[in-house]
Length: 346
Image (cartoon, rainbow, N blue to C red; front, side):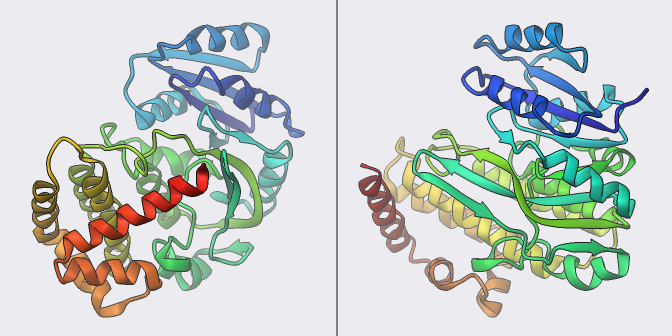
């Protein structure tokens, strides 16, 4: 008999955390599920841990594949899954024991295509709950159009997304997910959750939103907020181009939202370039930022944001500095904030 939920866990070099992740799924009060571990070319011993769990539990299966990134791993897991609903967990995260019982309950009660919950972000300093900026409850297509789609990418505090973009705080109806994930470009490794979640949301007919956080997201030091990624600028441009394409295919007029989303991402890309590209002097970093700001899609996004505001005081000031090409002053703003963060962590 097919399981009701397939839980797909991409695994890549998370030996320190993967057992706790798998154990948190096995501890679920709801039991009608399978677990698919996708070992995405790990080199730290995760392969052996995955095989161990598959040997000990009949509901666990393993795929071993060459490293291809998170989308490649999710697609591989989805391909062999059998569940009516699909859930994802990153292998360094964990979930509350009642997550799937409560989410599948809403999915079945309302015949929902997607069930959405909230997230708890955790690092060594503590935890913070991230909420969806839409009310708890059931949304049919008319209500989605009125209350969710207009604020999907931009509707939260300080310009944040109205709906949490993560794929891991959601249950997806299989057919809905396969339609979006099937043609998904596997090379995308920046913003891939949003690029899958939001088109799924646009395709959904029935959605239920739960005002509760079950998913514990572990923030690790290798994130883009702390280390330099030389390809981040090009990744961000590609991401927005693919969003434009996905929205156009669905006839969704989301340009205003996407401009705000693009500008918010651009600020992080510029921060990454100015603070962490230590291989070149600051003057050359500023020239790279200037070229990035001059690219048509990014320039258009900042024009929209500068006319409409809505980012919140701190980011609105950054936007003004960028619009006025005060790149060195913005660099100092980023630098001072980074020093303050390091000081408070000591």
